[in-house]
Image (cartoon, rainbow, N blue to C red; front, side, top):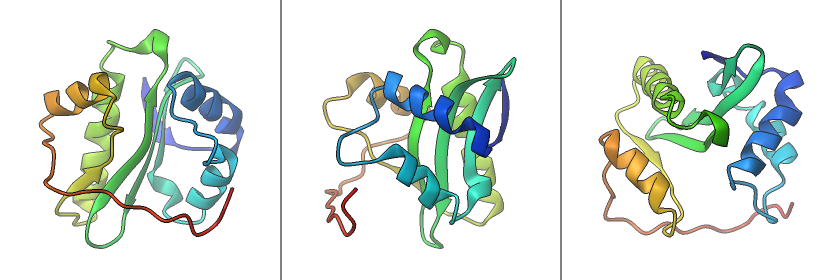
Length: 138
């Protein structure tokens, strides 16, 4: 798998990947999320490409205080091939180059498989509660 920045022609494949991975929710329009990401640090929108097929993707960002990873997904048929680990290593490398002191991410509380994945990579649960407020309805 080659990790590269997202290209517009990846849009449909990335949305299919996110859908297959169970990341798409009715209140988040993935096309709008992609459009928004392309206006802020588009070079940190990563795609994993295996022989011309999008098999992994992640939106990475840095706000000057914390780094974030959103929408990390690996295609179901590519799981177990270390693609998720490699994508996270690249996200960490890029954020470190930007001077980012800490990477944060959010996991749905019932997603035990993904929690185990991140714990295996050395991530721990923060003593924080995540709050959100929708400012723009999709």
